[in-house]
Image (cartoon, rainbow, N blue to C red; front, side):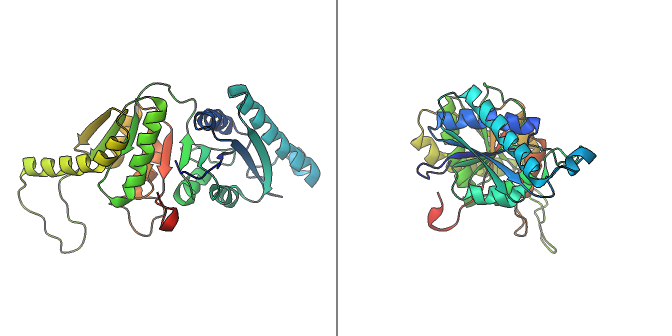
Length: 298
């Protein structure tokens, strides 16, 4: 999580059950970090992000805004049920969900979202707002799926890139706060051509390859392990596709943490292919930590 002094945990709500799941997680998260909670609903007239029935479509603007206020009030009540002493505020902001919450992320310590909202298509595993915000938010994004488990480790994907450093640091801090283990997963495959004309060896020294990947994993977590000696670290080297390895680990995890980009990401993608796949298929809450450029990084 960022170190922005006094920054709140922000949760986006839209009246859906998944948003209330996110509110409960956000309330506990804010209380653990001794931060306030801010509940935000994006109100877009005349489009509310959901299909309007004949009665709702006939409502005047003021009545629709009152409905939006009720969405926030319900979320505030839910948060207070979870953490009665938590400082909680709510706001209805004009605009579509993604630009509104992107703006909120500039001053937030963490942005919490349900994995799907009222506006999603039934066949989508993750709503478009969660995908867009995970790729572009100016703070870490926590995507919630139902009620998270209270046991199990924090899992972090390690690919050896400089861009994954912040995700590893975030994961260590989370494991320390939760009093649980950290599982650092590094997935690797045999070398393969990545462009036209690339040549790969006809034979591999399997032990040498494995030793090199072990070194990458150990070096990636060593510094953070020294900063968090209270966290027990389990390094896990897996011969598999990275996304598949992390999705498998998510079945027994409290939380999975990934960087928004990694060593294999294409420059034109806002969200790396691995983080995108894990976002859609993880069985636990997922934190996506985007690299912050410039003085604000770290």
